[in-house]
Amino acid sequence: MHGRALVVGGGIAGLAAARGLLRAGWEVEVRERRGSPPDIGGALGLWHGSMAALDRLGLGERIRERAERPSRGVLADPSGRALVSVGRRGTNACLISRSSLLAVLLDGLPDGLVRWRTPVTEADVRGAGAFDAVVGADGIHSLVRRTAFPWAAVPRPLGTVAYRGTAPGPVGVASETWGRGRLFGVTPMDARTTNWFASLRTELLRGREDRDHVDLLRELYGGWHPVVTRVLDALPGTGVDRRELHDLPALASYVHGRHVLIGDAAHAMAPNLGRGACESLVDAAALADALGAEPAVGGALARYDRRRHGPTRRIVDASRALNRVSTAVRLHGPRNRAMGVLGHLL
Ligand SMILES: Cc1cc2nc3c(=O)[nH]c(=O)nc-3n(C[C@H](O)[C@H](O)[C@H](O)COP(=O)(O)OP(=O)(O)OC[C@H]3O[C@@H](n4cnc5c(N)ncnc54)[C@H](O)[C@@H]3O)c2cc1C
Image (cartoon, rainbow, N blue to C red; front, side, top):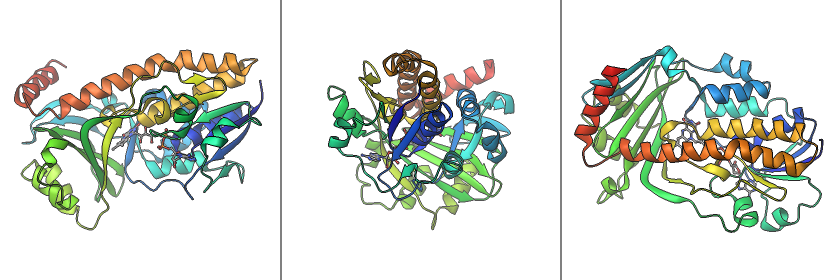
């Protein structure tokens, strides 16, 4: 069927949904409260399923042209000893900067389709009668979810904080290093830039609340192996993004009437598996497929829900579990030994 959709939110999920719906023959309006795409640096790993979704949106090749492929992926301990190591085929991911992904999603959308600086209100969500479908792509604190799914639980803290940014200079290997209560990750971003992220249990911040981000990171990760130290040395003067991490308890359904949730609005997850943006792209393609194929909106949204609810819930749970294991404060030594044995077996 063809119809009119209001997409709330112009992030990865919202822009991808807009592209998919246009291809499916729908009329689309995106309303985004910001004046332009968010300027959060850093690279995103795009796994196989999300690349397939980008292919269905007609964007896969443009992403591949801009993406980096790490030569290897390594899980290490703070001394630099590799616990698990996989070759290029095992990493199976393209890495692309968030800003490049957003630029590709935006490029070629008709002028005026995205209405920037247009925050959607509760009244808009309740009264969007001119639209056949209202797509909540408005992130973890989604207004569409709070308004149209008032029974939905609120995001829950994971007890971890993430820092992320970029450092000058290339890196070929993607690595994650697990220590006591904290991890540090380094991946390629482009030919001139390294992407980094750090995550740690909030209890490690006690007594350090007033510390500058760079000083804090240098204190907590100082003495780790040279790949980490190189990034720490490059930090002064670069921007550091800090956020407390949350995920979203399960909703019974991502659909209520003509309201449908996609991306973080539906299933915000811990970043440890690097799957939040990936699943947002898969949601967008699945929603467009369903709305393009089914004769009625109700049937299409039910089809989207059947396809996406179960898989995304499993990834939320797995990401939460990995968040705990990778930043464990107790038994981190046996954990790393077990990972080493696993790496050896692999
Ligand atoms: C530290 C960290 C690292 C991550 N690393 C990865 C990774 O490596 N790989 C990966 O796949 N994922 C990663 N993610 C997850 C990924 O960033 C998210 O899953 C993804 O950005 C979700 O996109 P979204 O469009 O659903 O939500 P958002 O990016 O939050 O976009 C929502 C948009 O809606 C707008 N909005 C909100 N309310 C309104 C309103 N009322 N009216 C109008 N507009 C509104 C917002 O301004 C925003 O632009 C990471 C997340 C974090 C926190």
